[in-house]
Length: 119
Figure 1 (tube, one colour):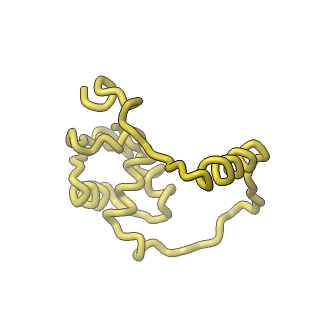
Figure 2 (tube, one colour):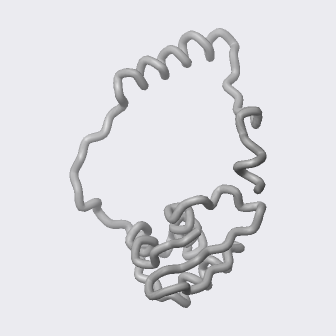
Figure 3 (tube, rainbow, N blue to C red):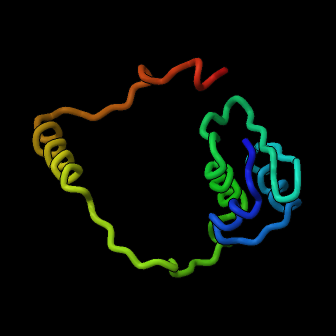
């Protein structure tokens, strides 16, 4: 996975050098090397199928760096979030119709492709 150092640092809100980023990623069992100015090439072991995009690299940097060391700050945008009406109906239906009838929601690995995840 290629990752832009500035984007990774901006996503998590810290300013780390290239050497610090590589060291933090090493703690998370990811090997990284500087391939050009401001670009890292991150290699993941086969057991880390969750690292696919640059944002996944940023997440691992945040975990390896330590969430408690990242300063909390106010977002620079003001917005009001809410559920879409279709999501509200689906949640209500799932809760009322299925959960109260004794059904249990499960996640199975039937839909996971071996070819996409392990090759």
